[in-house]
Image 1: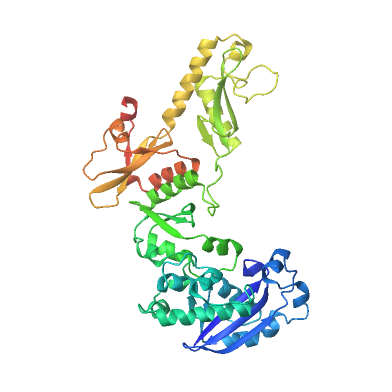
Image 2: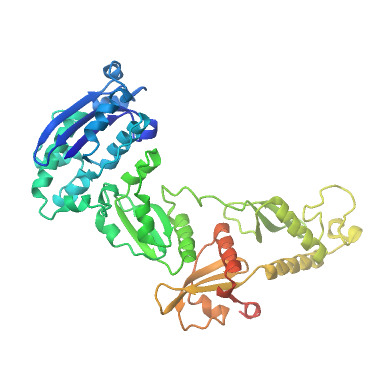
Length: 460
């Protein structure tokens, strides 16, 4: 037995919206044998645009029962049957959410007539209920009303049952099948093509634009996890409706997948990626030339498109780095903005310092350049060599002077003994703080994967 359900609501997601009307058609596999329909008082104002769409006004539902008053009837009508709807996850999420609020735990197998129509009746110009029914000659005199849409869906479902020569409906109902939980606009073939390997996957909208990028140790398993459960939140409902295609690229390791994900999020700026869209480190160590020609060093907030000598997680960290450079290279604390008063310079040269004009521009700038080179020498240069996508290759990530140079795949037999040669085999990528720290932490946790370039760096 099938319970064919249609609802009208005050908005797009169950957790913040109410049901204004519900209709249920009980279908025995041949025809509708029972119908149920009622208006419902949602307990809140119906937005004017929804009133215009459905024709259901606040006045119409003022005397209607609240959902909890009809929950018993709805639960016992649907429970034990197969829940069928056009875009089933939307209707099911609302009915399940509001039944749960009334104390009933709805557990049903589900069938989506959008997904089934795409399989059983391929080649239609549109699979929205109104346009599909028009193409099939199914009448509906009460469009965007629960009873009219439920009757039209029931007639469509009868047609699907009659034409299901390839047994798509029984296949979707098998316990191992995840067909009914997939987004309504996503063809199952995209899931079937996904590999059980590390990599990055992309969700595309109806125009092919990437709306989400994710990484996975197992692409197939991770993608499937996006579609499990019945989250009733607005973000998930919008997310599911926008997924029309999936593409992917395999990576040798989880780390390569993490880095590729970060690169792609910055490149594509997908709609549904909420993280990694801001700088994690907010300060940097900068140098600039003043009006007299002296090079000055300072810690400042990160500026867009700026290239700091070194990134800092805090102002304090930057000041501590500057203090070490001041001590090691006899720099002026006033020129480094560490000493901000008008007292005598507290640096090593004091009254003979550059800030008093006693030290020449050439001499002082030479010390600053030495400090910069000394800072660079403390920044690591190394590669991480790890598993590849196939048995005859390795993945490789190169950090040069504390920053990501690039990554890629090299032959299993390639000897990583020259920095310049390795660069020719890798693709340069723009790194960020999140990526740099991820790589450095990974190298510390897995030192056997690390290839050092201490002497070779100076020769390259």
